[in-house]
Image 1 (cartoon, helix red, strand yellow):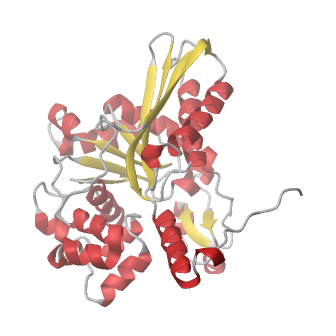
Image 2: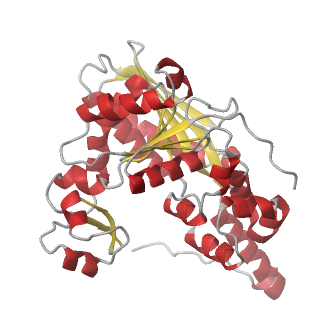
Length: 382
């Protein structure tokens, strides 16, 4: 396998509200949000009482007995975060949404206009965000890097130190010092891979690049190859303004135009299912998508969405709904009926599950022979 060619450098800024899931619901009241009985977010009063991310439910509730424990409401999280996204879109042409409370934007252009990256950060933190962030939400972590991975790590470190963190352009020492545990926290690699690598002394991106692409690919497959690309500053994920010309896409037009959003979402659902089942997506999963709407008054709304774990048809339709709902709710943003909806896949990854299933079938055939291999079928009826 030949080493990957380095893509054109960019500068990405990550804005991350670590406790958005709790703070958008409870504000200044003590509250904890759990997922699988582990803390994923908590308000400032709960944090002050000793609640930390990853704690078990019984430990966290013992630390802060008066805390509310609301179920996670993803729709409400995105509905509350829509105003923040709109404010960022007014400042920067392309914003990629990772999750409610977590966005990435290309800062290269705005940096030229606002006098550098420090000027953009100052404007965001001191002027743009205070006017749209709900009361009780803690200040965001802000990080700047040359890729989505290092930008997310910079934001993670910003959350720890309490001020923005910037990866110096062209500084390989900064990138080499990124710990694999930090990439686990940002969702760029899984904890099992990081654990295996740490047992052989590979704990940072500098160690990964020293091993070389052949060793990483032979031992860890596409995960190792991708990790090596991150170690040399070649993150294949690009912001929404960099859409490949040959990207798989579907477009739907409405005649007559639709004033009701429900049929638009249903049409998008059918289009997304067709797109993800197309030959272009065989053996691949969608990890990034651009969703765009248009009206008969030539108004448009476009937004990028990323998810390292992959965007299923259901997840993509949810994002169509969140984006459309936010656009319709924004005062004065839309003055006419909707004429078009487009979904463009901007980033993909190998479908590891499909590859593993295929390898399992192949092993079974070798051991038992094709005549004794059967695929289970669910009988019809209730």
